[in-house]
Picture 1 (cartoon, one colour):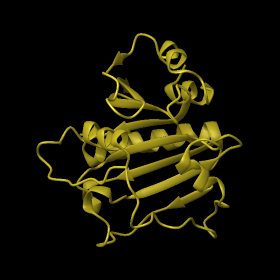
Picture 2 (cartoon, rainbow, N blue to C red):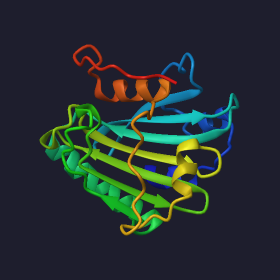
Picture 3 (cartoon, helix red, strand yellow):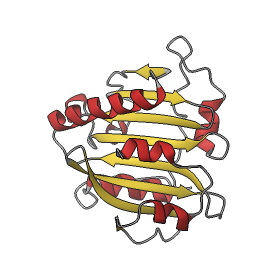
Length: 203
């Protein structure tokens, strides 16, 4: 089964042990020391990818799932991104929100995006972010996040919005903070911890 179809078939709230059985045989990394997150590496669409699962509120129930590509050239990222969007559109229909942000000088370079798309289903919010070096991003890559619409705090915010190009959601607030697991996911995906001097704010 295709990886995106596997992910779609996952049920929110499954236990960490059942999740790891679902992806049995993968190359698992040590569990995160503070956040309840597990990560494995794989190859998808011909390139290495990291898969991260988050379990919320001190429970072992799945609440968020992420897929990330990095360390690829802009041309390689463009190739993979089109295939990712095609696969997501096949599974969820056309995205309900799509934006191509400009090179906003007020946005930190490591978080600049070339494109963002969002799908909302009855139980999930799926968001893709696409960042290219040619757009000024210092951490180019592709991220796809699936969130439980009821239990993932970020997805609950999207769930309240009517997603369309006429009613675009607000930008991330200036005081937006990344969790330790998200910080580690970004660093791990870029493989550039020691080369890039980035200050993150933890929650």
